[in-house]
Length: 218
View 1 (tube, rainbow, N blue to C red):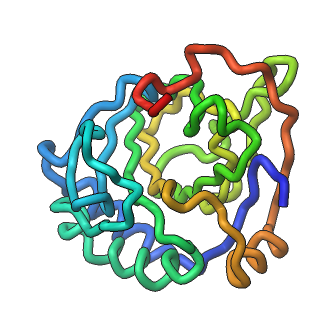
View 2: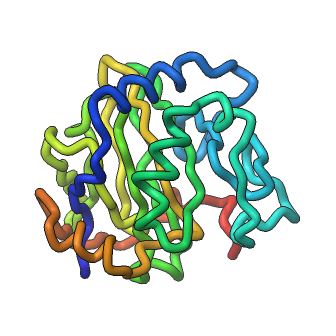
């Protein structure tokens, strides 16, 4: 199942989406941290040790000892959606984080993987709660921007492919699920990808050093 982007339907209702957005907008400032590499605010929802904030050296968030953070506990609808509509097909369960990109501010072009992981199983799940969907783009082999359709708020993307979002007048708020889930096959997930509403594969560029997170282990 090689693809760069695949739109999938996990059954989240508009009412659930609106309730989750309200929960995020009501979170206190102290649960946010700024990620300078990506250029946005982040909120840990389900994380190793239930910790908030940026990664801390010496804490293994891949060990499977995950629990909801203070922020996650303040988002009951989100917890319900995660438990009932995400975790059944996320094997193993992944880290859940909110990304908040400020109005009129895009993300920095980046990879959500190490350079040595490019082309391996590095898929991430995204559910957009607010903001323009079609501002998301991937960089192709000629360093052109290849945009996704402005239609699908629920999708899986290849985190080892350079990507970003262009600025928009609205704040972009996205639920993001990643490692230790990487897109490992299972019956439920395979069926969703097979029945994807839209799928595309983008040629891969040579990686620029600035696209790689310096916080990743070498």
